[in-house]
Image (cartoon, rainbow, N blue to C red; front, side):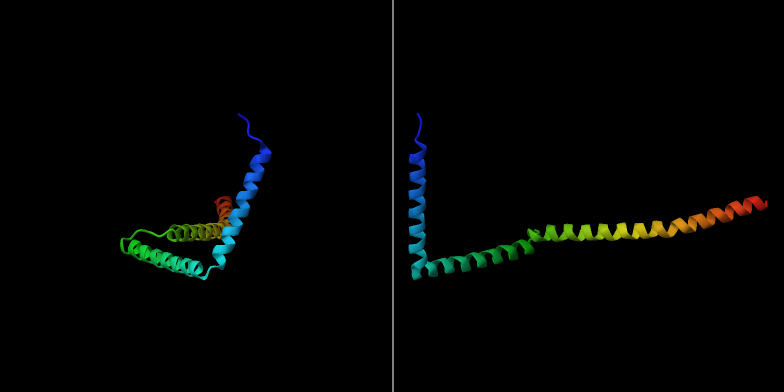
Length: 108
């Protein structure tokens, strides 16, 4: 059974038109907009309450692991910088020590 692609395109186009019309009518309705604003306020309050309860239960929020990973990355970069500076500082000191020990052995 084949379906005419033209028919499907017309059906999709008509669906888009109806959706656009309904959206326009709803957005122009002040009561609907008030209801949407109230629903959004309710969702915000619910999100805050859930977050508060999760903190009281010591359950990390979504942002806490992200912050912890960012802090770990920063600390790893800092330690790598210390290691690099330490390696640069040790390089000349090792060479001086090696030169002194070679001179001391030659003097024996």
